[in-house]
Amino acid sequence: MRALVYHGPGQKAWEEVPDPEITDDGDVIVQVDATTICGTDLHILKGDVPAVQPGRVLGHEAVGTVWEAGDGVRRLCQGDRVLVSCISGCGSCRYCREARYGQCTEFGGWILGRKINGTQAEFVRVPYADTSTFRIPGGVSDEEALMLADILPTGYEVGVLAGGVRPGDVVAVVGAGPVGLSAITGARLYSPGHIVAIDLSGTRLEAAGQFGADVTVNNSREDALGVIKDLTGRLGADVAIEAAGVPASFELAVKLARPGGRIASIGVHGQAAALHLEEQWARDITITTGLVDTSSTPTLMRLITTGQIDASRFITHHFDLDDIVQAYDVFARAADTKALKVVLTRGE
Ligand SMILES: NC(=O)c1ccc[n+]([C@@H]2O[C@H](COP(=O)([O-])OP(=O)(O)OC[C@H]3O[C@@H](n4cnc5c(N)ncnc54)[C@H](O)[C@@H]3O)[C@@H](O)[C@H]2O)c1
Ligand SMILES: [Zn+2]
Ligand SMILES: [Zn+2]
Image 1 (cartoon, rainbow, N blue to C red):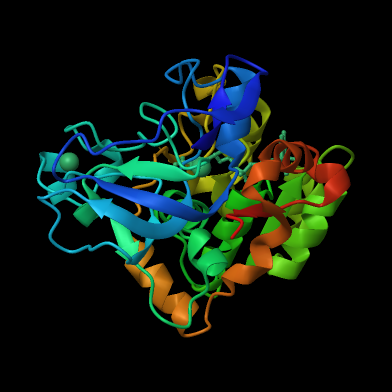
Image 2 (cartoon, rainbow, N blue to C red):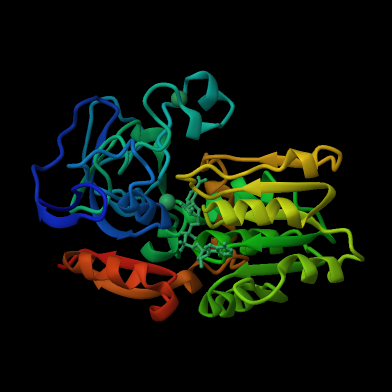
């Protein structure tokens, strides 16, 4: 089969690799019908995620059709249409029993496209298939479901739920890429007072306005802290969500939160970021970090089914899977191309 293979920082190729095989009776092999590229894949290509070794097939998001199921798989059969989640969970370890699948101790968590071969391929082996895939209800398209593989649960769980967004809150979102926009989408479910999107890119801020941010700040030329202070009687944001994954975005999010406020850091960080305790120790702040668990996927799937979340609005570009290298280029130049999510589909 063909797959997108990581060959070390800055290097990747769409090339022929061996077909995946079932190695555990809980595995399925999924034929990939649709996959996409994540900001995290760009971090990997920058060398920010050293766990990813050269030779690895990238990708942790897919919708596909079960091609083959191991003997221990109970819920899935050949031909089933499934969402392959970015997180695999054994379902029985201490963390999985608490629905913290991201922390699974039995070689689950974020393994696809990181520790084992991923979804940017014609076929993918999915371990713990019963507890790591979701059936897709009729009426939900492949590409809508694909937005549930990572970005929507990430913005919702690691941003909105971890940040404890409540009605009336002023929510600042630093970084308005697909994950930040997912956090905005999730925050809107709670009727916040204001959603302030902060990004260095005008095109991303335009998108944030369309997704429901009522204030947008370009922090390459505007003072984000000043805007938030003006909006909150000098206090600061109730919740600051960081969705960019660079030291500057984390350090800004900490500054934006009011005393007693909450900072939810979503970004994948490859470098140290400073926490100025000499400024923060008396401010009663709460900082959370996290890998998505995808425990909210069934809830978000229902919200898509009932039309409360429009997942299709994230999709800006379509490509054939064979053109994935070109898709990476378009996705990496988002400020010029206005790319949010690029969908890659299998040719007939
Ligand atoms: N914690 C998790 O489980 C998890 C899951 C998925 C993605 N992520 C991470 O979430 C982050 C966002 O993902 P994405 O796909 O939206 O990425 P993206 O690269 O498409 O978007 C990041 C946005 O942040 C903006 N940005 C960069 N520096 C900034 C700064 N100093 N101030 C304000 N804005 C800034 C960029 O202009 C861009 O619009 C990434 O770090 C990604 O790796 C984390
Ligand atoms: Zn991702
Ligand atoms: Zn587990």
